[in-house]
Image (cartoon, rainbow, N blue to C red):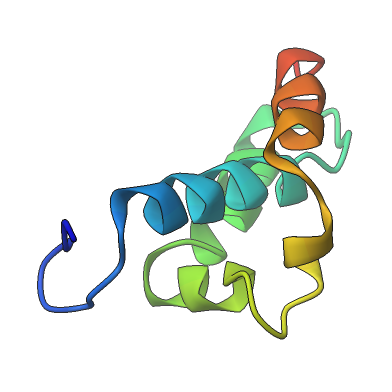
Length: 73
């Protein structure tokens, strides 16, 4: 198992959390500065909110996340 720092996250789980974070930050807000600041506020330690178990995000397959990301501006 590959870990990221001391968290014990696998590379796969870290990748999924980042994809979920990216999708969740897409609010469609027209002001780029507002969008960026809001999205940054959800990162860092808050990535734990995007875990596979108990977050609701685990129900979205990675292939669906990839499609959503591909459609982002």
